[in-house]
Structures are given as structure tokens and as C-alpha cells.
Image 1 (tube, rainbow, N blue to C red):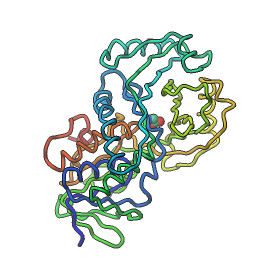
Image 2 (spheres, rainbow, N blue to C red):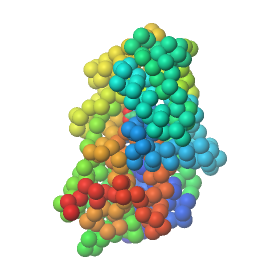
Image 3 (cartoon, rainbow, N blue to C red):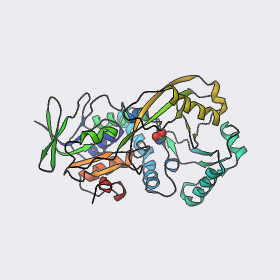
Image 4 (cartoon, helix red, strand yellow):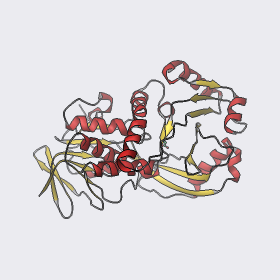
Length: 368
Ligand code: GLY
């Protein structure tokens, strides 16, 4: 039997960042991925690091998101130095655009409530001129500190960094079950092997609940797939380099000259097809917001399944019924943003250094 200190299941960003931080702490780690690395939500994400956009006010998501955002520059530099892979971190800032008076009032409230974010309210004309936007725009909030990465490159850099630190990464390796001794998880099974480990970290995104069906002791993880369809256009000269984040669409300018427009939010189970309706929905919203995009070249479209929880916060912490099984999944719309804190918390849990904030504990959804 092969043995490791920690087995990480899942090779998306949550799995790779967990493996990377664990290896940095000196653990012997094996990462098992059923397909290719970052082939699901992590490879599809627009890569926005947008705590103010994704959270409402000073919520838990905002606090954890701001903390995680602050770690990106150093983590990305470290990954470039270690691996040569550049996650293309861009300190672009973000323009939160309102097309209704109600949203504009919300943005004005955010400016007052979050002074540390140094937000600035812009009027309608200024906003339109700043980002070549159309007549629907009635104002905006400029957020200088928000940023983005190229999610597939960030995932690749994390996995390469983990491998460089000694993590054994095995792709095409399906975990078919967990080895238990009473309520304690002591390893995992694949079709060809049994792998023993002191700890197992489950990072399988939207697939995590079904993997635990047989062993969860009646606790089903409340994680559902929510499809996001994304369209890539060639970025017109006039388009802003800042993230443009409106009520129903966002635009993110990538270093390769594409402008990524997203995203739908569809409850369609595990169907990750790109559909005519999905592409139309995104393009209608994008061209209404920024009319110049109507003549931009079409570069492609893709879809991913966000692992979504009822409160939009991830599940990070011990499984409520199984010892030594740590969950790091359910990152909803913020898996890229929360990557650095996720890696740190998983490593701290395994090292028994410090607990994860209560708000993220999987037990919050377990019956008392
Ligand atoms: N974080 C943006 C999205 O999930 O569409």
C-alpha cells in the first residue's frame, strides 16, 4: 500500500493550492485527479479577484476575500520564481457599474461602509467616457484594489509549484471510495490501488457530495453545480483595461488581447455545454453595456460548473461525521479569489495550528 501524510482529491485550484501550501509546510502529499488538472470550474473561471463585487457590504465573504486578495501579488511572484509559469496577475482595478438608481445607491453606500477600500463614486458621463459604455449607465464605483489572474494559468502554476515541492500528482486517477477504520478515514481507493494517508482533503468541487454518498453518515454536502457560460471577444482599443462589473454582466481584459464576458448562472445539473441561449444572454448584456463590442471578433465560448453552497461561502474544515477528512470545496463564485486563504487554512488544519473561521465550517449545515 502506498502511503502519504496527506491525500488531496481533486486537481482544480482548491486541490492544487491545498497541496502547494501543505508541501510548503513539509507534508508528504499525493494529489489524485480523475481527469486533467483544472479541467472544470477552475479552467473556466474569468479569474476576477473581486471581493467588493461578489460580497455585499462587510460580510464574511468580503473579509475573507480582502484578506485573500492581499496575498496574490506575493503568491504569484513566488510561483513565477519557482515554476516559470506566470498566472498573469493584473492590478487592473474594477469599475462597478450601475444601470439602475437602486444599484447606484447600493454602490454609494458601499463607498461609505468600506473606507479602507478607497472607493470613489463616478457620475454617469464620467463612467461612460472612462470605459466606452452605453446610455444605460447611470454611475459607478471605482475600486482601485481589485484585480484578476488568468485562472487556467494560475491553476497550472499552483500545480507546477506543488510538484516542484515534491507533491506526487496523478491525473486520470478516479477515487472510487474512502478507506475507513470506524469513523476515521485512513485512505482512499482507486480502481488499481489503495492509498493510505493520515489526512484526506476533498477538493472535488461540485462532485464532492456524490463522492461521499456512501460514507457521509447521513450528511450530504450542500453543494450544487451552477453553470457559468463565458464568451471571449477580441478587445477593442476603446475597451477599458479595468474589470467592468455590472448587475448582469462583467468584462475582463486579459493580457492576450481577449475580453472575457461572463457569465450565466444556470441550475442545469452537470450539463456543462455551451448553448446558443447562454452565449446570446452574455452577448446581449455585454453589447448593451458596451455597444462597441458588437463589432468585436468572436474568439470563443466555454462553460464551467461552479460548486455552489446555499450561503455562497465555501466549506472548509473537518467533515462533521468523519475524522481526518477535511473538506475544501463549495467555493461558489469565489474559488479563484479565495485560493490563497484556502491553501493556508487547509495546511493549518492538517498541522493543527489554528482552526478555520466558524463561518466556513461544514458543520454549519449539519443537523445539531
Ligand atoms: N466569479 C464570477 C463568476 O462566477 O461568474
